[in-house]
Length: 59
Image (cartoon, rainbow, N blue to C red; front, side, top):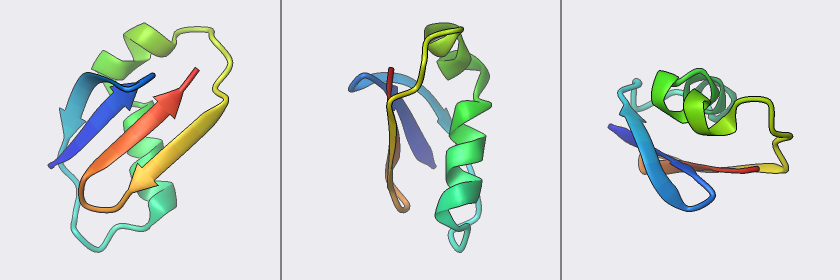
């Protein structure tokens, strides 16, 4: 299970295979329905991926 954070706050979770690469994890996090509510039309400054743990999206 991967945790999705937006600006350091927990905004969602999703499950992905353990051997997924960073791009696949990033794509899944950005398309997460709960995280999308907080991203909306704001520009994304940075996406930090920590394998097998979390994705932090900075807007």
